[in-house]
Amino acid sequence: MRRLARAIHNIKIITICGGMPFGPQLGSLAHGAHIVVGTPGRIEDHVRRQTLDLTNITTLVLDEADRMLEMGFQDAVDTIVEAMPSARQNLLFSATYPPEIDAIAKRIMVRPEKFEVESTHADNIIRQHFYEARSEEDRNRAVALLLAEFNPESTVIFCNTKKQVQALYRHLKQLGYACLELQGDLEQKDRDQALVRFANKSASVLVATDVAARGLDIEALDLVINYQLAFEPEVHTHRIGRTGRAGNKGNACSLVSGADNRRIALLEEMLEMDITLESLPDEQVLARPPRIPAMMTIQIDGGKKQKVRPGDIVGALTSDNRISGDDVGKISVHDNWAFVAVRKEHSKIALQLLGQGKIKGRKFRARPLS
Image 1: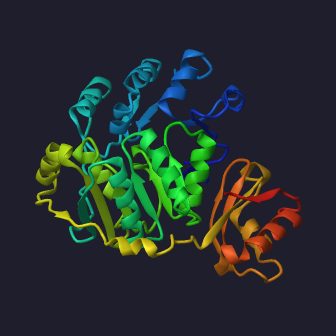
Image 2 (image 1 turned 90 degrees about the horizontal axis):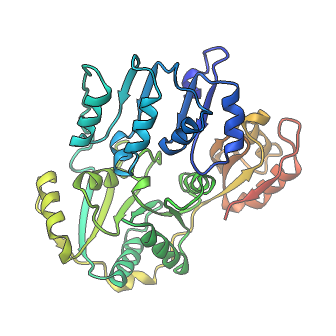
């Protein structure tokens, strides 16, 4: 939103998210804002505390509306809507259109227009594989075999529960994989860092619940593994849709058991294909060492509020020609910190240049994320 509005003079945009301290949010809200972007639960908290006044709202946008309902935010959304004037514009964005979305649209919208966008995935872009795995031990073994066989640079593994994410994450770390987890118990700061490191390609595997199935902006994702089939066929589509983007080909591997017969039948109907189980790769592939990421992510304790820009970071890293621009990867600048990916072989030099040198005429602390 800030990027879109940067040509508008003096516009104020603030974010209100759960997992972040209330104090700074209260300070920002005290001075008003033109646009508020936030999560339903935290916005509801501010509405109930009367620290967020919605009586002058002219536009309401619900992004990932279907996901909000799946995650139990119906009551929060209702509270937020009730605090707004009835005369406003409503926009609902949803990857699927279940009956619940239709119901909320009828309740809060007046003669709405519906726009549908066709899927841009060609059938041959994502190759789907299905393997049998009856127990957790079988699934862990299958994941290791598939990672060794495909040797992907970037993999997302979807689990149905937070406990599964935590257990598989620990298992893969023990096997030596550069692995991250993304699940609901993480603080917002830890989620942000995990997503940045994975997008920077300084970690090769992300184990996640379906919170990561939407809105995840990661280019060139080579492999998706479903540790278990999703509860709903539509969610399966969202999961595998993380790979095979921008014209690239991708692989999606799903682990199934005898208890999944009904889900498999629903998938076959939705995908209009017969699902055939394949044999897992031979155990010999486990002799291959886990893939080592080419990049390391460095956190800089300075961001937008300190006027730090991506160009300033690149300039600091390439100032004495020991690091070239080609050795610098993705840069992400937040309010009070920034992240930059650097090729691992140049990471020590990069930390020296960022920690001992100056950015914008100031010294900032720089440290690697591990």
